Amino acid sequence: MVEREQIIEIVVAVTAVFLMIGTMVGIGVNYGGEGGTLSETGGEMLIGAIVGFVVLMTLVGVVLAFVLNDSDGASDGQNTA
Image: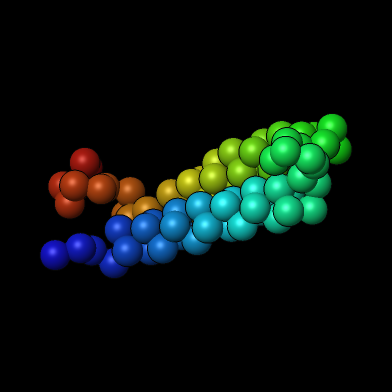
């Protein structure tokens, strides 16, 4: 059975991927040139979107690590003291 934490991670990751795909499609529609190529501005926007996606996923990973972390500090259920 899939645990609650895994479901949260999956939902957040899939949402971020759909956001990235939507952003890329939006850039392609708005900055697309003749023959299916991007304009110079569109290319810069696409690079910015990719960098933003990497930063977003890094921040999401850090936040999820803190939010979903066990409060007692022992992840395997064993007491270290």
